[in-house]
Image (cartoon, rainbow, N blue to C red; front, side):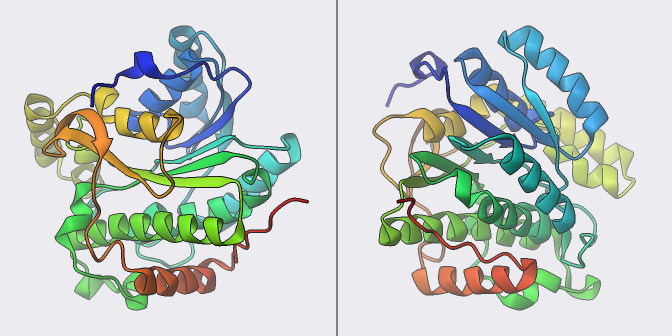
Length: 309
């Protein structure tokens, strides 16, 4: 498959919300959506940084995005952000669940969940569920995962509140990325069963050069490791702009099949996007249903797809 951002259609009149859009994949995704005419909501934890990034996006993208304060590690913040969007707008055409943390030292979210599963999965689960009323008119939800979902063989309810003594940072990251795919595919199954006009898809960037690789060591106070990770990543990884291609393809390709998972074409490492296969575990509908139930219990959000009449 040959594809580039030049193949993105005109998005004038389309409204998109991108989480984690102040750097890396989210920034590049928001930039290309703006360049192709979309109205973009930049959702980020730090409103001051988001405002600065919005100025850069305006200059480079030719359109001014809207800034939305959102901390996915705080379910009250998720609720406030969703309510703000629901108050201002009557529809949302694209939701790009992109934000995430990778391999930090042990931390908990505001609500007491292990930070990576709490942010990468539960925060996006709650956000998507609270935005459902805006997403049932031909909208797309793109959930960003990772090839690291291949490194784990399952997930349990106990993982959501795993204590520090049994925490392994890369295992927890893999589980959070597995959760992203289980959620994406279960959302697809539920949308089709309900006859809802919503397309759920997934994407992963391959190995892309972003700040995410250094963020974990920085949180641990290991400046040397952070510098090493940043340098090594720049040497061997593709750019963040190229890493955003799978997300952009999943968000804009007209003939995308529901439930598709998009990754880089060359060994899922780099290159133009193509449809790739999740692991069997990620495709397990029973495990996906269990995760959905655990997520409802954890977040207090019970997403129900109802078709507008």
